[in-house]
Image 1: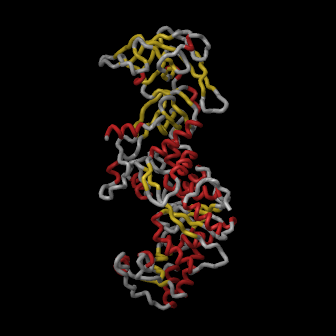
Image 2 (image 1 turned 120 degrees about the vertical axis):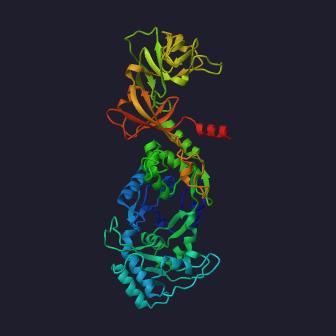
Image 3 (image 1 turned 180 degrees about the vertical axis):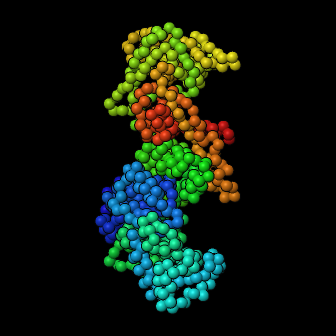
Length: 562
């Protein structure tokens, strides 16, 4: 029995009931079964966390099985990407399996069904087959080929396997019930002819099993105890069980299919077909574009794997599909990065600040905390000089009493450094401020212990020393879709809602400690948000992606629009 103390979701309750009813603990086995026809997305991440999480909680093995039964859409690239994503999320599978591992067994079982009179070869066209299947309210009619003799079916099926027929000419169908209220039970297709190269079996096969035939039988061969899938497969459960009934050996574990609801994420799409469309039509730069809902996109944007796992645990498992606000995911990202990301200073919309009474050739190296959340505090050295960059929005020539940053005649503290006072500005011919002049209190350096260093001022702003600054390309990402549910209106193309401002590229100036930052490194630009180094970085120029802001600014935008 499980020793879990937390409240159980309905999937866990099913497992607990099965254990109480005699299923041995050592017979528990789960699986994550993606089709390698695209990159995994945030919805898959929830399924990964569910299956592998159950494996951890129940100390049971979890298989990674690739449903590779459609060679026209599947590629080794996707297999590799899926393995990389599962590993990055922090999970380990017990066995790496493929539906193609079982092609011979599936074929042999199909022959047995033919011999039992429970499957037949049909050569109706797809249009004819659709007509004879009837409607949800009207029973179907039998195919004229439904009563072929066993011998004829075996001969035709063998010829299908041997490549003697072209694509689409014949299929193998299960013989079940053309009057069933469940349309999936009306003699479903088990095999179709596809003269395609398979990424693992090459040209060995030219007939391929349909999902419903391959899936449950793969579960059975791997002795999966609980086959968990999303709610759209609920109508498939009856067929899943019918196929198992015809091959099941009572001495073995019989897999149990159970369904949970998709948790859709706002301002995204998670259909592989639509994600592929975004890639192929150039709306994004690739499957790992940081605006994509793919796991690889989230990884490139700087989302920590633990944040995605925490998000999956927070939204939990439900029986009803609903839309989860992406702000919850961003909250989990922010919460995790707050604990782990070093603090640094960067200026993204710079204006020059000249401290007129600071010595011309002097540079001080000031001590700054790396992360106040660390158990043992560590520090770095930051250069300070006469000329600095500050954020343009941190200065106003004239400001009201609620503006606590730099203005003429008022004081602010430069973070980890000195208190300064705004004195004057220099403007260009168009009246734009190009330089701010200020003076500093020489005794006010942070941490010096002097009386002046303890003096309180209303604002603190960040800065970067001009002669030491690293110039960086900074990519500011926003949500890819302006509509919270771009898939919601089936009458409108989802691409209508693509956010034209989902990417803005700017030049930022960063403290020199970032000179050695590597691909994937995550930092907090103080007062601005969390950022990570992008793989496009070179020795000549570092590139940062904005991961998430320090707070949910989108909620404010939406409230203003309302």
